[in-house]
Length: 297
Image (cartoon, rainbow, N blue to C red):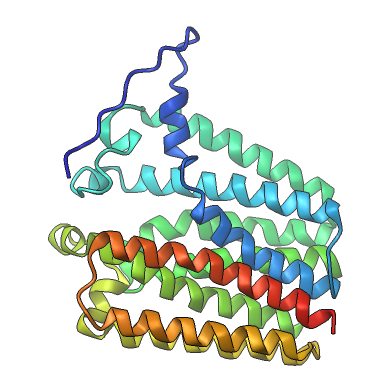
């Protein structure tokens, strides 16, 4: 696909707003939803129903800010790699449309805003917050070190659920650790599907990914991760003695996952992989609805 050209900023202030918006993926918030949804699971389960609007507002805002900061960290770390990948070479940093100092300036602003939200939460959450930043900073480099860097992404996303639970309860109980590991397994599944888009480029430039690691067994790898997710979500529900509607939701998701795993046994084109990846936003929504329904009966 030919590289897409973007017009230079015509804003009188000289601020490249369009490039900054694309730097944080403002046009595509799938990543924000995938980070946010596990935190909503934790808020609902810890609250045993609808959480307070106060906490909802904080974690919705925080998820947007931290995901935006995360993709900037990713693009700063991968700038040279991105220039060699067809899908990513038009990103503002890779194309040279934005400079690194501009990216760092926006990153700093986002992190300051995210940190300011901590003052609205209990002190226990403050101690957990630095771990969230550390995980976000480590993820972009994990694809250089480990064969399944998607696991690091999952740990980073799962930590949002840990912080959300702590914000409600002021402590960490067994169900939240089930949500944490379930989120990590889920991320391995959907981000492996996402990585199918870049398999050939990743192999050529030496970047590691689960899609390359699993190879012809990608359906087995993704399927195993999804089974782990479902088992742990089921355990979390059992620990809080949730109602039957929740387990009916998990059964429906198991059927959907079976369809995706069967699709992965065939050759998957990049657009199909992206569509399959985006469908997981609705998986997260279904789990959230299942929690709410199960807690109400």
